[in-house]
Amino acid sequence: MAVKINENYMLIKSNYLFAEIARRVDRFQEENPEADIIKMGIGDVTIPLPKAVVKAFKAAVDEMGEKETFMGYGPEQGYSFLIKEIIEKDYAVRGIKLDEDEVFISDGAKCDTGNIQEIFGLDNTIAVTDPVYPVYVESNVMAGRSGAMDEDGKYDGMVYIPCTADNDFTPELPETPVDLIYLCYPNNPTGTALTKDELAKWVEYARENNSIILFDAAYEAYITEDNIPHSIYEIEGAREVAIEFRSFSKNAGFTGTRCAFTVVPKEVKAYDSEGEAHSLNPLWNRRQTTKFNGVSYPVQVAAKAVYSEEGQAEIKESIAYYMKNAEIIRESLKEMGLSIYGGVNSPYIWVKTPEGMTSWEFFDLLLSKANVVGTPGVGFGPSGEGYFRITAFNTLENTKEAMERISKLEI
Ligand code: MLT
Image (cartoon, rainbow, N blue to C red; front, side):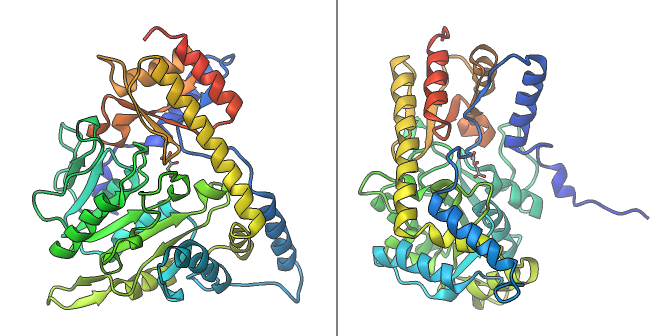
């Protein structure tokens, strides 16, 4: 007798995409200690936390050190003071009504989008847009919802919906019915967005087919165009078919601080084997209360400060800073004759690799000749082959320097 592993882990690549990139970059740096590498690969922010956030954060840490104000375990779902702000300032202002027990504070949209599949049966069909944030796919593979990866780079049993320049990065509705649909808009990695009408088609599809949409809106703060929805609940009928994920990482610099939230409206239902419908809200609540003890009090106080007047002004400034970088990247690469997408409602620019060059070849070229790191499109799925992602999250100086270096390459 011996302990058995979860063999589903044998189906996935040994390294997570960003871990693999970090490994390659570290190796290159070791071999080229002089190289001044500019990282525009992982979507990590560079601007520090807003001052209003730091002030609130510090004051809350002080509270934790005093007998009178010390806090022990908080509610697993998050403190009401933060949930109320979210409901009022993110949703009510857009005409969306949410109850407090429909919002669950967490330590990241990555964790929530990875964990959410636990409340669904293993025999559900999963659909993802392709290219896609790897967490959606790999968390389902780990759980046993797929077979092995075929030679096209697709996991057997999963439905991939291609989003490429050929269809203007607009996913077509699946030909065969699917159960769970992961949508991320503004999109990671392509940086493109869906209009309200386009998203409404998905909500309608989900309603007609008894599907559920898992909507990742982590990049909503980067939306600049009016016809792009900030929340899926702006679409009529979405409350019955969609769960939404949001994060403080990309809008307020919480990548290292960790705070996010997930909205599970009580109307979203799934069925047991007898055909009886169950609200998913209590299921997610049960999952969280069993496996999660909540985000720390100071972090939630810090997140609340994001909604203060001062906090809002500061985050608007940082987002404008990153979007200026996005524009510089777009313009520079366009001038080089490359085809570029995204970067208008998102901090990601999706670049078509030069003729005849794969994503990883372009990655190697940029790393070795320009010492610039991006993310190979194929790392996000088979339809990402021939594309490359560059983030606008670096400093203005580094962004300009990176573009200058790239423009000198012969490509
Ligand atoms: C990315 O680079 O795609 C992001 O960092 C993903 C994430 O936030 O986990």
